[in-house]
Image (tube, rainbow, N blue to C red; front, side):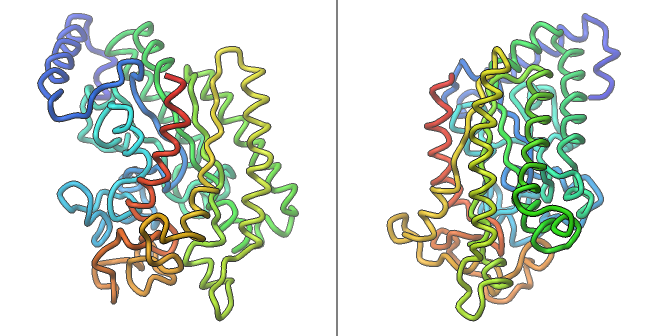
Length: 360
């Protein structure tokens, strides 16, 4: 694909014809298309990452069983889940494609790029130090990849068509959990220099810079997912919840504090950026509702993940040799020590779709 920038105009026309042909011939295999949504793009961390970390040197990987056991074909794809993640459900919900591919996948074709890709990197954060700690893609690096993507599309279909695609696409951002869990509460690297008020301000400054730059690159409709109730994930219950493994309220309160600042930031950016349609997407409350009222959603287990013992395992610790991995993940809110199951993602992503759909 890197050679596209040097193609002659006749070759570009050929590619466009091929894309139209392929789109028409796979139409019966994809959901009904929302013609007003050109593509879906995602940035952030493991909530939205569909496999970019497979192609970088990092320990933050999950391209091995039992991850992906309920995904298409039952193969691990680099999604920190037993199946699909919100990026996939949202792309499907808008009729764009069944799942959102990772941008770094070397097998992507032009037809894949035109309808959107994922730039998110598991382990990333608003704070660039968070990404450095796990050697993953920071938000500025994800933006660099998006600029590269934009150049490829410009070369293939022209600047005007590229601008139209981007202005009619949905952009998603979900990040921040690792900033609090890994960077602030688990190490002194930031907590020794910032109190939680100052640190959340630092994260908000990064969020503002990212969103403004993304807008400057052509994005118009941007859904920003707020911070989840990270103190209630199984690993944090194990590490900080005492014998009863209760939710770690210090982390939950930090997430609530961040969210209370994120919403007005989005309102401010909408007023300042003339064509922006930034959307504050609340997943904190839907997830805490599942945890507090599991039976209402069909869940049986909320304090343990499906994989292994369920109390701590994530990434390399959640593998095919982990003892006791559950047989039916749909009964669990969490798949591993941190990440929700496909079933949980499907439930609260439906709320995102309702919030975003009115913008298209």
